[in-house]
Every structure is written in C-alpha cells, then in structure tokens.
Image (tube, rainbow, N blue to C red; front, side, top):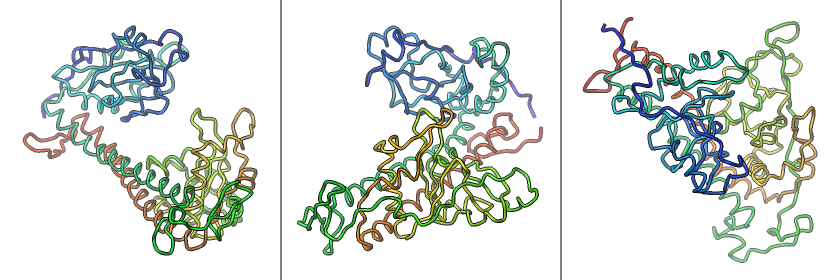
Length: 443
C-alpha cells in the first residue's frame, strides 16, 4: 500500500475567514434581505433556517469580504457548537457570516464535499485543539489553516458514496415534511373549516350541512358534534420514572427512558438516544404502549420545547430493544379511545403551532414548565361524531406509519454513513477507479 499523502488546508483553499456582527447588532436585523449566517444555523452536515437573520444592502456591503458563495463550507469556530460543519445551501444565497462562523472555499484540487466529510471525521480533534487557553472554546484561523487534509485522487467518488446516503436521508426528510403539511391541511379542512366529507362524500359546510351555534367556542359547529376539553380524551397517566443507572435492590426492570430531547428524534430526525435505566417492579404499569403520548413539560430552549408531543406508535416501539418509559421531565398519557389518537395529536399540535401553550407555563428555578393539567382541563376543542373521528384517524395513521418508517431508515442510513466515514477518510477503505466500488485495505 502506498503511503497516505497530506497537505495543509491553507494550501488547498482560496479563503479561510470569519465575518463580524453588523453595526447595531440584532437591532439591525431585517425581515428579509441578505442572509446573515450565525453559529445556530450551522449544524453537523445540515443547515438550519431556524433563526436565520437578514440584513439590508448597506450592512451587506460592509461585510462584502465575507460573502458566501455556492459550495462554500461553513465551520463554527467559537462556543459550544464549535466544529459543527455544513455546506451552504444555494437557496439561502446571497449571504454573509458573522464572527462565529468561518468560510472555507476550496481550490479545484479539493472537492468541497470531501472536505465536509473530512472535517466531520476530524471533529473530535478540532474540539480538542479549541480548548487550548482562554475561557471560551475557539478555533483560531491559524489552527484551521494548518489542519492537515488527506489527499485522495478519488476524493469525489469517496464523497459521493457518503453523500448518496445523506441525499436519501434528506429525501426522506422532505417526504416527511410533506406528510406533516398534508396532515395539518386535512385537520384544518375537516375541523376548522368543517368541510369533512358528508354522507355523500361532499364537503359538509360548503354543501349546506347544518351548523349549530356553540357558546363555549363562540362559533357554529356541525350538528351532532360536541365541545370537550383535551382532558376528557385522556384515560390514564403513565408519567415519569427515571429509575437507576444500574440494577439494584427493587430496581430490576430494564427499560429505555424517553427524555424531552428524544422527542425530536422520534418526530423529526430519527436518532433517538434514550438511555437504558432500571425501574421499580411496582412501576411497570407506567410502561408505554402503542398509541400512548409523551409530552415534554420542562425545557428552556430559545425554541419552544415545552409542550412538544409525540405519539408512541407501533413503529416507534419497534425502534427500541427494551420496554419504553418516559422520564420525569415528560408527561405520558393514554387515551380512552384509540380511534381518537390522530385527532388528539392534530388538535394538540394545532395549539402548539398557535403558541397557545405559552399561556400555560410556570417556572421552577428559571426553567419553563408546562402546567399540563391546567392546559388540558381548560383547552376546548370540538368532538366530532365517532365515524368522522375514525375516518380521520385511519387516513392520518397511514401518514404516520410512513413517516416513522422513513425516520427508522434515516437512523439506519446514518449509522452506515458513520461506520464508513472514518474508514474512507483514513484510507482503510478506498473507492476503486472506474466504478464506485469499495475496496478494503489492511493497514
């Protein structure tokens, strides 16, 4: 085997540099204009538009020297998110970066996608060298410039093997986003506009279906429907048992424990890191079953996390090796009627999206807490006839099943990518010339 070759990143790039905070700081941000990329937008291998700031032409001209171009690699160089790296998405251009993000612009002899994956491979090293001196993690320009990058004549093919996996993950995410949008549209169409299919298949209200005034909601609702609190749908509380890390005494039941952060894995990313715990035998009745709900009731994120909900479907349960329970930072409940599961979930998410839950938050030691019982006992929704609820549940259950299948596949694809990544980057596995065939090498 030939000896691996390396070169310094500064010799393989035309630009390595970070930006600055616009004059006036956040007060200068606009609703639209030139995008200003901050560290919160740069995730590992993905770009987040959440909190993306915008500046006007005058501010953008002052930051012209840190203009972002297509195929640029973005690297976080300060703070807790240090060494997170992604490729800039073309749809957010034109853009600039602030002082916490560095632009890496490659020469023709370095494929930007290969650099992206190489930096992911070197993340632990980058985190280590960022802790030298000072009180705040920081990657200096000199440290980035002197980073050794392996030279691979098949670097584009190496990157394509990994990006093919990430492209499929991204496609699944887009499909899931469409499924979620369709579910929300259907809920609004049926239960806000009241144009669910009538007995003849026509939209109820638009076709002249009878409406009856409801004093609690201050609006007309379809004849035969009721108005109930969210609490009236709930059968039992299965909340919280954090248990112990190791089996001891009466803590003998091995479980995996869903925390607030894991809800996002179930809902949107596919990567769940619920820790293994041991709970009391007497608390086995708190184990979660198919169609139970878990709600995050404690959190302090800038993005509202308190009130996030997930449904523990059969597909979700299949992703765990052990029985499942929720931590004491969450609330778990089961419903009286399984035909109401998707309706309850949609109604909750509607309230969450409309920021209704902000009115039911208390504080403990500065941490926001959802007052679950206060909210569910106060929040009123329409309760359709059993047939309408069942029809809605059947339609959305298909959406949710497909969504969870995609998330499970994403988790498996990410595991495969993470397994291949170090072997491709250190030359243990190569991509043969003429075809994208992996060759294992003994080193």
